Length: 507
Ligand code: HEM
Ligand code: MTE
Ligand code: MO
Image (cartoon, rainbow, N blue to C red):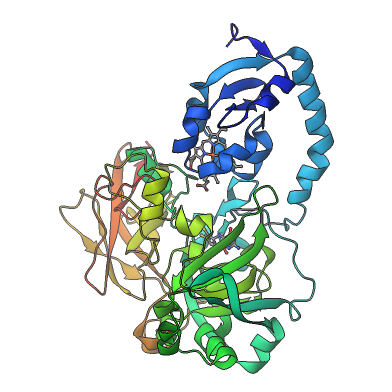
């Protein structure tokens, strides 16, 4: 880098389009990324930084602050800023700092028990050991997945309004009918319904998948998963009462999707967080969609969508839009980046899907079957008296769930790489409903909540180690795959290979 020529901020600023060439600054080095624009996973947004410093953008899209992105960038280095202009840039940044902090002015206080993997926007895993102590994850340690800063939230939950729009099925830009509903109305005018629903980010366990082959995204371990009792108004009843719409009628009118919009936007690009689900799902009572205003009997905390969020049971977390401010029926899917250009899987040999590949692939809705061990942690060292009890066994605890309302029928554990298996037992936790396994807690015969399980395996001899693996079987008979090679996908989603942890015993 030492022998790169020097350029001024003014010169860089001139290279602000595909015509002039796209130059960006990162830590005082200047890059000509013109030829990268077409293959940028984030699409044309990259042009917003043309002629400028990328850092403020990357503060918001923190995926960039990884060695893999920096190594791409390195290929395009062409110059260094002059010393004077490097100082000038620093001065400008300092003066914008307050403004920059402003984007994150609404971040709530968070439990020190959460395990953050990104600070801005905030993303944190549940602490695995504590997670296993409750059937209903305490709100304070429910994992958090924010794509954007937490929006400014209304002080009074009840008067918060959600816009309900019937878009013109032939023209996405036109709204045929529109009305507002407040949280108070949702509480008072509709049945109050509670479902136990496990939310899991589609990127859960990406770190393991990425060990097989690099996959892009935040490297979640196995606890981007939590379970809560969500309470709210059933979506299908709201659309029926306010618009007289049922599934049949919605289809006849030409509607195919119900779109949800969050209040969290990004002032740079004007993007908002949004998602959609097909009308067949949204308007079917037995799919259990809720406009939720309570989480475990309390107002929904700021990080989880106060005052109102959608809950799409059995789906990847991305569909359960937080901070809900708009619901629209449409012919189209949500135009949100996270609906159309992310949360999609590809065949294992497609290493670098293009923007076109993302646009073409179907949006992921439901989860496959998955289980994972939360105790002991991988690499755990047993010291005698701690962990291996007097009977020389290791106690294991984990979770299991499946998607689309499928229940988990059993979990199996192996210590010899799958040659022999033993059945795990269901945990009997104090806070779990007594009838957790019967139909009362499986409305419409659907199971949307996890089952926590435990097993004991023989402890390794002093100085030795054992690798424990688990897999779950759901009531469709579907099972987790043994290896990552068959399910690996470029975006690192739906990680559900056998979960393995290695436990060592001290001398
Ligand atoms: C994603 C490179 C600028 C917005 C990505 C990814 C790469 C990349 C490699 C995939 C990262 C991953 O998921 O691990 C670059 C380079 C840039 C640049 C080399 C140099 C100028 C920008 C700018 C913006 C932007 C200026 C926004 C204003 C995005 C978005 C994504 C993305 C929205 C997808 C994020 C996600 O998947 O959650 N970029 N980018 N990028 N980029 Fe960029
Ligand atoms: N809704 C909004 N408005 N903004 C978001 O960033 N993240 C989604 C979903 N809903 C998100 C959102 C994703 S990707 C997941 S996994 C879940 O929220 C996480 O929910 P939680 O933070 O309550 O655990
Ligand atoms: Mo997610």
